[in-house]
Length: 323
Image (cartoon, rainbow, N blue to C red):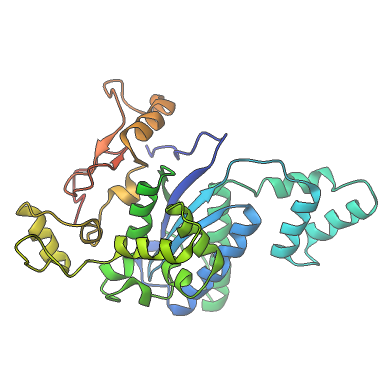
């Protein structure tokens, strides 16, 4: 039986690392598809009132790190503006909403309910995102049927600098792990690359990770999280860079930087259910206690095989956890 999706408490903001794969893991997503995914992502996030921190579109899957803000009341005017930006001036719901407001009666209750139902929910956001892309892809490819392998995976991430930095860097290093680029800035279908070329929302997302109001400072700090430095240990030896060397170094007990560790595939960051400090993960466990066996006393589990000592997850992954 699959675990019910773990979400935030509902009375505050919550951050999710969302992942979805193509059916059979086939490499169906060419550069045109990746560009389309990027083109759909931000407008939909604006409409739903979500904040995209970073993303990465790959050949057979995608990652999105997204914050669902604390719920706030939305006026008819704000709802109409979001709907106009997303659906266009002549969208069906937009026309109905505008006509009611012009008549002085306010937005029709049914239209308002429909629009509000698409706001501030990561599941609704991901469903709409995947369905919109699937319809476009099937028309483009003259095909029918499902494109995505399963429901999307999500990890509830603690909204702290340390947890967000770790997950964001892991996402933006996807093309490096896949051998597509040596430097994540050179992969144009990622949030990091978009931020570097001036995309305002992605810059704001990464600035928020570090609680920085200055992009240059945030970019420098994030770069340190992404890149392996040239210097080594006190003996001056060069740090390992390729994945096999990093795995060997770990097995021999070397001290590695976070940037090196994140060049490995770490299942906890995509399948750990909840991720953050021990206190955060245990609080999530307490909220979802009925989903776990009676013998389990707490939720926080270490990331086996990867030296990320301050990060815990809810799932205790053991088989091929780090590879």
